[in-house]
Picture 1: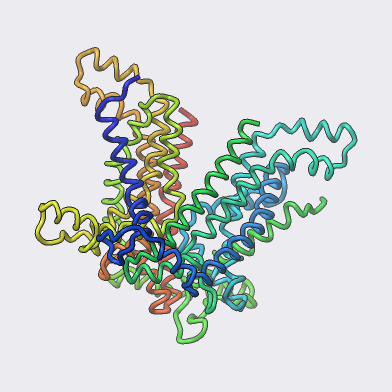
Picture 2: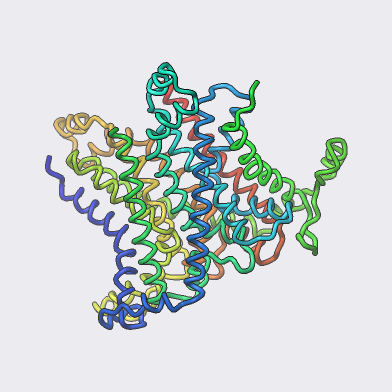
Length: 259
Length: 294
């Protein structure tokens, strides 16, 4: 089937609209000139500048630590929640359970951030690294549960039943049959939680305290002052890392669909 | 019945980090602000118990909600948010419909690739995608620079720090939300209907408008809701791309919270936003139900 000229124009325009702005940021991160519009030759000086920028590097480490800790926690609780929903058709408060698990997916970030901050204030916890981590765990758990739940939904229960018939204990049947089969989905959920945490500005702004500034918070503060090649460089690093993680997620979820 | 940890642990977690915070917001929305730390006087204290709460419920502070109606700031912010979100949605539609249509008419083996191309930018940081437009739209930015060097304009066009910039920002950020539902309906269409209309003498445009377009209304509605609703509560886009005088409800809420430290007002605004969000979700649900019964 040949595509009409109009369709080709729509495609090219749409894709260009999506990619050109990001590509320009990436290209100008290698600009030797400090000016946005003037191309002063190729240079990697802004990337070297990133390494020397201590506040930015500190914020990066805070972000990575928060993302790692919250992704691990969210993976454990999210997987348990998905298992609870799929395995147990009837328990007291199952409707409430499903509601609490899936509403956060559509809740505006500003609402999640505000409500979690108020919780930490009510509990009188010092705000900082741990409150950001807990807040990120709270909102990414639902995403992990969504992915693991989808995998559990098209899992054939007869495998585990066969293992039980052959004398495996419930725990051993789960650990040796079901878990290996849902592991790609769990890994994908974990990576998704990691990227979501790495990317979040709003929830972190609400729940952080003095001394705990994440990378998006630091970048946001600088962006409000204007465009600099250094932010371009930091953005490029972030874009490339997140794209790599997304490719891995796609690969993991694709493999389980074929299996 | 045996208590299962696999249910109990996530249950308690969700109760503590979803249900309890949400009730605190509701409680706060009915409280008065105070010069203290934390800066509010709670409407209900946990220790009082139900009888006292019921008594207090009669004398609840509706001040925050009354202020919302009386002070034009909040109504203006809401109207202006709705206007900007509507314009943004219109621009998204203008770009997304032809794009989704073209993908649906592309050779079958190319469609997944094209769709992936649309979704991938959505994964890169939201903040960076907005930032990219600052560099493009500023008076000394690339678009003005290019137009000037081609001799098309003498003075830079006002593209940045105004409503236009916000509308572009919304369109750019939410494009996939419109493309995906539209593609989902277009992909299932029976194209022979459009061909039949063409064979019977309709022009290409007329065949599309009378035959294909009406069949995609469901995807269109879903897309519009998915774009309009989050755009309504947007905070980062107006803050980075709009001028300092931009009124949007998300921005007002942010400044009530961080600037004025009027936490109860911020909570009341958050509740309002949540109620506005619930409406389209109910509409979506009704559409789903209608499809199931149809």
